Image (cartoon, rainbow, N blue to C red; front, side):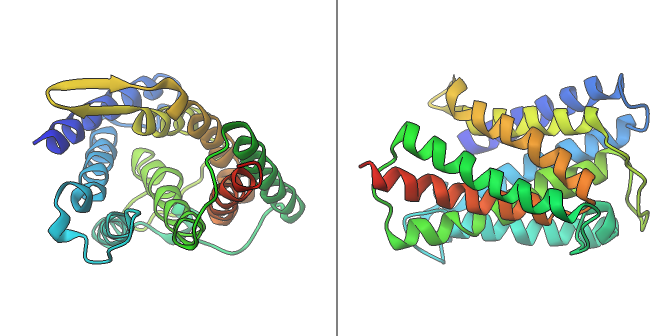
Length: 239
């Protein structure tokens, strides 16, 4: 029940944030804002299924492998159901600014390493490194930098989209990504940890801009994966 309440709350919050973004980008409609919000709420709910119901954690492990796999499956279903064109989500290997892509990925690695040295998470085991190098970057970037922006801007039913740099949408999804990491609900009460959401929020602004500047989701995905890995490797060095 807690998971459902949180998912519904997050859905309502996402709808409100997207409606606020509509004041700055008139391409956003009420219907698409609602659809994108429902998708984010469902993604949260299905990502947490394995954690709240251990019997569903068919992949096992200490990390939420199953939840992230569920998120990827939901993303595929949404892409097919809404007929979202690959380019509308940045699913292309082509880079409009190759040099920027290289520099940005290196920047994400440095960013992650610096945070690791600052917060010192301790020595990471093989499973932790494998998970952080793959699942969060793949599932979360597809959701927040790929599918959600495409939906909220109405680029469904095969539309390729003509984004430019949609700053209102980038900032809206960055805010929601930060809130998703910092807000929780349990035992009838909400909790909010600003520090848990601050760095995902900052990284999301960079990742969102890079997704549209390069025309591809590749840099945000690789940047996210490598930053997470660098965080745990650097944190282990000083442990």
